[in-house]
Image (cartoon, rainbow, N blue to C red):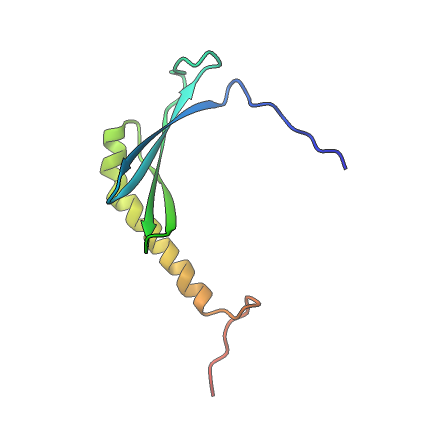
Length: 107
């Protein structure tokens, strides 16, 4: 079996910048860069949030750009939506047996 490994694309390079708030979580800014490391102004930065539930479960979610200010402003809404999605998935999985089949009601 042959394994093909590709080189990173010169047109898809990003520099990651992390901003942390120990109480709320982290924001990672994906800054588009050119091959020489300079900013690539033809692309918009991307923003990603992350927080913890019960001290260990990391929840990640996209934030709204185009600036760190707008990403921070979108944090509450985006974080809450991500937490609700995780809760929904946990609830659904609690209703399934280990094989993934729905639990049958107890008689």
